[in-house]
Image (cartoon, rainbow, N blue to C red; front, side):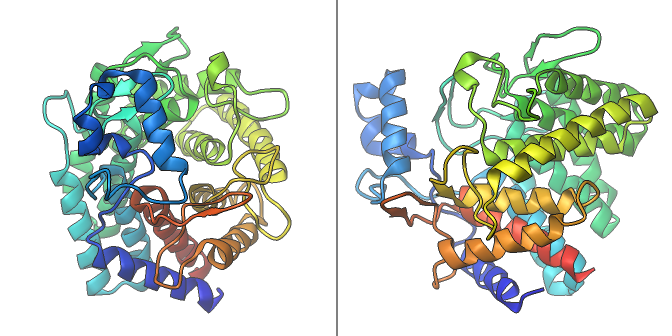
Length: 392
């Protein structure tokens, strides 16, 4: 492994520790005390415009708009996953202490009042489909928290982490909305407050149920996970790609959501005991992977955000691609090589010598804001997994 990547990981980890794993987020503009003091806070259109202005601007206006820095539960889960990968690689007491501290922080961030363990964002969030007030649990944050707890249970041989993760299934099955439900298929909502149909989010619910079902020998949970997989596979396009969701307003295809779909399908397939169904899953994964690898990466490792254009270059796309490529080595023997190329390209083009990664490079300017969840947490996770796997 190139020593450059190990140095990048160490300096990034130090930067994040020095900032107490807290910072800004691309979507935290609605935390602005200035905006919250205006009547526009009740307008969907105003919330979207305000969020996009802060998200895309090369100048960070958050201090002026009185947006506080904060910790994000999904970010904490990603930092914990990175720390666990680092512990598995170096096996030091210091690495274990760091991982356990982050896991304690993650558990303390659980939201109360739901059927099971759940986590959400630390800001109001207005998406194209729905509005989620601060503290609303999301399946995305919850699934990554569960993933970290499951990995901790294995890494430390500590069943208490798995017990915390087990109750996530109650949140998924009792609190999330279900769409397009049949005897063989289901699509879980993003939050308990909406009825959106988003492929990667529903699959994260499925991945979590698969992990719980396999660990606790609960075949009914594995069947629920297969229902989410069947639904998404049915919506796979002829070229192997997946849109963000089945609605016309969700017709775009991007790098990191495709990576999430591939990872979740792979994890669900890993616990599938039916040979015919597993073959169907694997075929969909291979087709999706072939499209993703061919369309989203330039020869030197440049990770594209959209398959049909070069810009923007986004740190989240790069980091999630590294994680996905490490996990998809059984599909492609050259996946780890590409992961290293993407990592080196990202270090060369998005890394700041002070220890953090920029958000995006656009055609005519760069957004240098060091977003904590979107960029730093994901890059720590990606680099940690790559270093761990390469060390083997």
